[in-house]
Image (cartoon, rainbow, N blue to C red; front, side):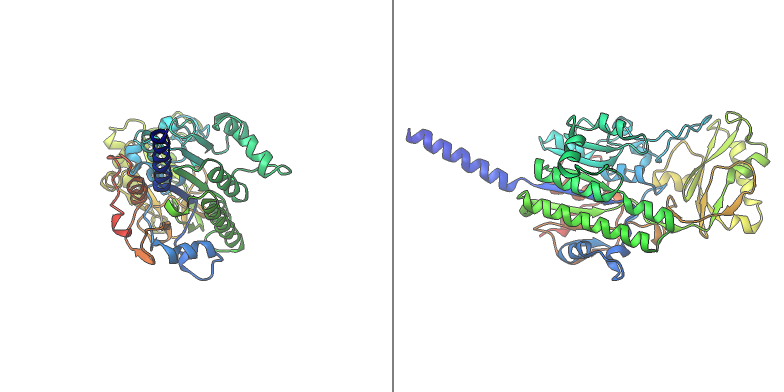
Length: 433
């Protein structure tokens, strides 16, 4: 009996040691997150600024091209650029139609993910409103971002089955839950942390992006939205403590892109239509077509090998009046390849002087614009996103000057000791004691 009792005590001790050593990563993105939200005093973000003092932060993080939500978020969970992971925009380029199809299903990702690497280690994995995560087999608790496809679709793909109804009933019994708003998303994420204690959880807070699209970089709507997101970070930190995870959790708060104010809309397909390269009356009648993505646009050729038409478009753009050429710069094939943009596009355009891109092929090529957008080539300050990380063994008050989204992947990979050799970010080990 003494031997059995001793064996039981030993097993219990081993279980407690393993529980104490079990590490967790809670990875939160704030859509449209900018470094100035935690670097500048004017923003009411006490929780973000608390993390800044307690951990490491970035002066700015370079995004992907185009610097939009879905490819950015997929780079964060894979550690590779869009050309490699396959999610090259939010929407899918449809050559002969415009149904609004988006990238939303995990099966469209062509590279290994931190979700899969965590599941291979037997970890519990959770995700809340993360883009391109529906039907991800490695995610145990998953309410995915499915764009505007509707709540019935979101509920259908949520796991475990019925979790959306459970959360609504427990947390918001008298409200109509709007999953795209942080006042619902953040408390739901905190509930999942307390309930399941996931070793890896990815969380996407969305409302700041909507505010910046509406009014631009500044204004009360943006101030209110980032304050609400900051409150959400507070709820998530509180849940980490209440779940008994505070001593072994790395909390990351990052984003996908920054923002620019928009004053003009450029419609380059108007120029192509005038040159006879596309027919505005027939969507399937074209030799060249620009695909607008907010602050950028990508040229697709009916025949990808049609060098003559590609050169014709380049000549057309270079021959425009200076007042029109001043609204964009050309991102050539070499630059596209280096940054890992869509390999099927001939080249790209990135907006200048407050310009975003539209899809019109008739009327004026240059029109008035408003609000804000992103998607620009990621080599300017305004389009950089932010990064904050805090953990019990992390160095305090350290600023990272040079960082891109793939480096975020490696923070997760190294902290959880995941096997993800495909991730191409730089090591984070020097930021820990």
